[in-house]
Image: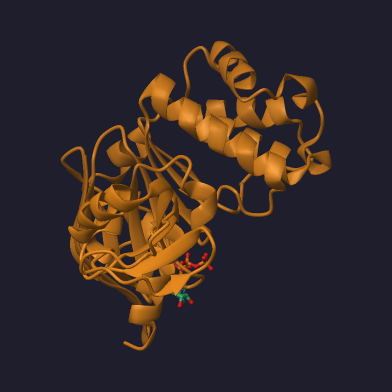
Length: 300
Ligand SMILES: Nc1ncnc2c1ncn2[C@@H]1O[C@H](COP(=O)(O)OP(=O)(O)OP(=O)(O)O)[C@@H](O)[C@H]1O
């Protein structure tokens, strides 16, 4: 378990993080989402102990990251945007070099395992300088996995990748989580890319956590007055009981409801008087809600 408690960080006059608190459960994949400059990288650097906070505390499996940095680094792997790879060496030689630097036992076996896992067999002997961004990401992941970390911090792992590359990285992330039970924190400014892999989210804005929880929790919190779009055949019109539609076309109508509790009541009324084919809550996806949260916090 990772606990971040009341972290504050400033660079001179610039307040980068303000009272940031959250917990991350073991074995989860958490998306750290926020626009450029919202503090994601700073937070990751504090979490893995390479940067000190001005106040607050981060503990990883009970260890204070500012006090027990070596032990924390031994169980964490961090992939940053600067991959830290040597361009004039082959991929495999890079892995051998870092394995040696970590003092890794049975390095060749471990490297073979990772080359296989990340499917870099075909180009492991080519110089990294000739790699595409996607190939470098895979090799970078292999590098941070060398010492068998149980926690991964991935800072913008999909940045600069084409759609195929993004899918590949997300597939590997899912695989690392399910097969090796790694706890993973992924930062990104693009929510849509991550929604396929994350089970928890932390939304950041201007150095503060503005929302956190599972997709379901966040949606329920913001979905206080849902708008329902219904596709149906209603021979006697769409007005039913206390419900009047806002807009009507031949086979669809939208209803603005005052609470979630009205959804089953309205649907029951409609099915009593016609044939209902489909009902959809508008703006009920995490992406729409994220923009609503950003909008709400933009003026603070
Ligand atoms: N070493 C530093 N010195 C001064 N200011 C810094 C430093 N590192 C970060 N900052 C500032 O702290 C704030 C948060 O930056 P940070 O890089 O953590 O954001 P981010 O969310 O990771 O952004 P991005 O998505 O662009 O990577 C920014 O205003 C940034 O300019």
